[in-house]
Length: 116
Length: 117
Image (cartoon, rainbow over all chains, first blue to last red; front, side, top):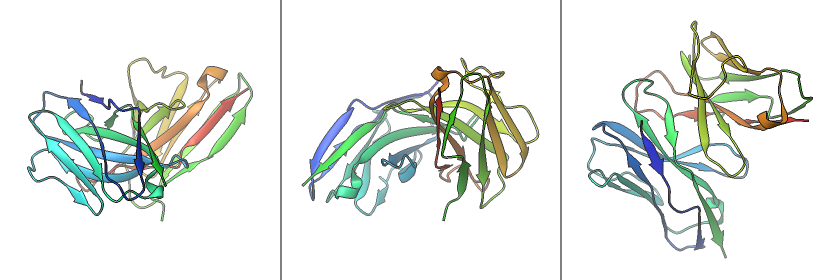
């Protein structure tokens, strides 16, 4: 079974600064997808960014980018020019391409605080 | 607009009663839906996979007789918490993945906060 680990329960960043959230995972599969989801106080899950394992190029979505290191099984999220609205819980998630392929395995989450 | 509608958003019930939570896929037909449970300040834990027209697949440790799942149509899955007890109080979230391809994102309902008193 796959596992996802987020070693930072809480992080804090000043507005306009950059912060990196860590995520590692364990799998024996070669093909899979990785995601970062944001859960604001409303608790609605929102997709931030996704990465296909077969792609070497790191995904980027505006201020959000990832550092995907497949050999190291690492998938960190970088948030640039942090905004107050970025404050939320961030979950790293893994999706297999086999079995119940669409289900997600989530990490334990990182609570991001954004300060003025 | 919302892709997945989950109802109710909040429910309080008495211990021993049953509660039904609905999850509707608004934009596409979904043969598979997922039910997650989230305790305060914790992550989402998959409870079961809801399969249209067949039995749900439950994760290890989840009581299928307690958490009844019905997926009678391609747009609706329901989770019924039977004989609810205070320890069942939690946040329940459903999720739907579009059938178009495996690289599409999962869409989530707004969640249901269940409080059993």
